Length: 113
Image 1 (cartoon, helix red, strand yellow):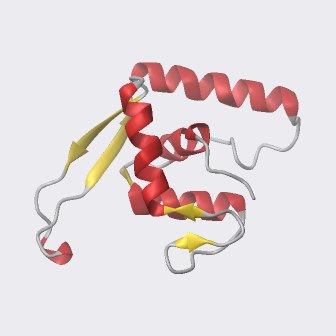
Image 2 (cartoon, rainbow, N blue to C red):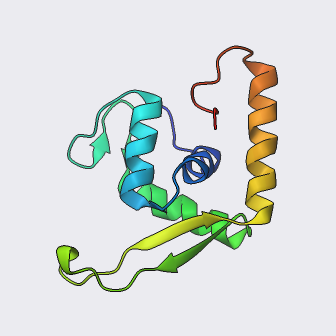
């Protein structure tokens, strides 16, 4: 069973212009293979809550920042938390992608911009 790492979440946030939990989850499911099923991708055990836990850790490290949206009527006036890379996060993404390119030349599906 694979585990969702903070680096995977960081790369997904980098690839999504207005990233929030569900979009990061969907992006990871596409990149890792299994389809979304009741909030969990069975083979990989990716839960939406995992995204938020990893994002909180990334924010504490200064790699991302988050902003709450205004209440959204289509969500029952609940707000959405958006995630954005900081400069340090952008540098870390570049480092991860460079390391990944060295390990797996020609296999850039997950780390491609």
